[in-house]
Length: 311
Image 1 (cartoon, rainbow, N blue to C red):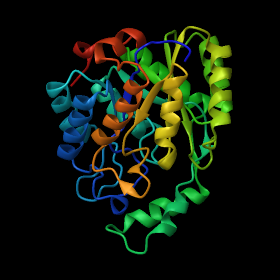
Image 2: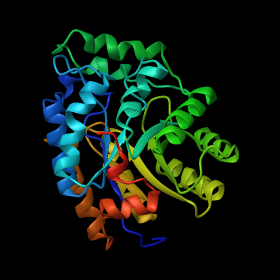
Image 3: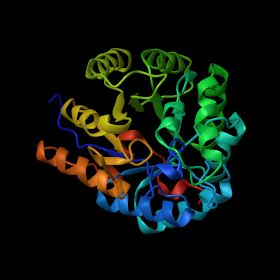
Image 4: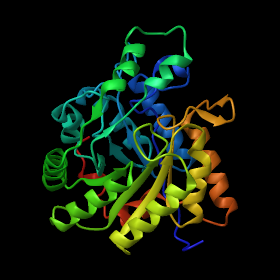
């Protein structure tokens, strides 16, 4: 193990990828999202990465009003850092994707570091019947879809949120080139350290869930960013726990939650994101490492503090 810093656990309780048919445990309503987030924080998550959904259909929804139904509740019940998605749901416009973060002025927001094919369409073939009509079409459209994150989009988001609201970013890097995009952004002087890099594996269109890829991307990030960065790993589906464990072994941080995987073990659905937080916490602590508190995460990531938000 490279260093012995405490491990920051991020939890992403709902996301915008999975659909209601895939798991009865996926939080849909503001009440369910609030409850899932509070339970995850109580289990040890220092950061909660948030998306919203239409409470009637479960479809990803960028409405700031929906975020405002659960974010104040989470803040009231926990000390967790709230991280608002700017990825939104596949197919949303740049302005739609930013609306909730602009409204809530959070301590953190996600930032995807490059355009990419983002294929969720293979999941359509796993189901014969659907709870809602929108689900199969939502998955199928990704066969001919580019998840847009141009340099212009990235600059707009950094200046609108970062400069305008003092929000810091979770820079999501799905492939090697995304690390170089982030290094270029740093060179422009638009952001300053410490930066928080989230390495993402196992999405069709991004880096595959191969441990060699994790090792190489970590090595490249070390070379590009030196000592001035924090890094974390998330991996889709069955790769979630092995990859987050490897990150902890290498001195990194971890992300779990039903956004990334609906399962707790082979063939067994997780009943909550908190169950996944508890599992990775148990693994990390069994390695002799400690879990970071929200206060530690705020200090290490240079966050503005929970008293500086708009919810």
